[in-house]
Image (cartoon, rainbow, N blue to C red):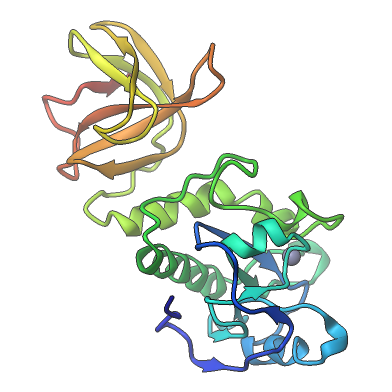
Length: 257
Ligand SMILES: [Zn+2]
């Protein structure tokens, strides 16, 4: 297991479990409740009495420092289950009442780039934010009595997933809004359990039918995939919108109406 090349410094704490007992398959961004730099945040996790840590800290200027190596389990989320699977990241945030919890632009940008790097090094093909523990982008407050990652970051997890996935698959330009009603332009469009040609086919759309896609997409197997929650299954279902050419094409399978 490697560490991020994006760090500006390292200040390792002994507040961790060595080694982690599960492979990395998720990311848990936190907010510090602190407008400070990455090194100061790492320093705050050095005393044994603190009994807390994070794999990485991102400061108000966007600088990234490592506090616990990725091969080890940081003590960040109060959940052995989550922290053995997650790379955890503490992010600086504004503290004034009018923008409490908001990440500075440079902090948010570094968070996106660090998440992309974590995905690439650990074989996470795309971020799937489900709003619960079934996905691979998780929140501290799902495991402990806390408001972390705070009001702003909590409401930006969907966008964070889009921003990470966009960079993981940089051949796709980011549409202003992907979500919407799409009309099927071909006779048989397969609905699958994964955004991949390997996904099980569980239904089909036919020419003229419409589907409401969420504000999410990914590029895989040469196609852009959209998703929705199946009415009867309650599970995410994926459809190929068209070839992954970087723009809308005449032969797209689904056309936004
Ligand atoms: Zn937290």
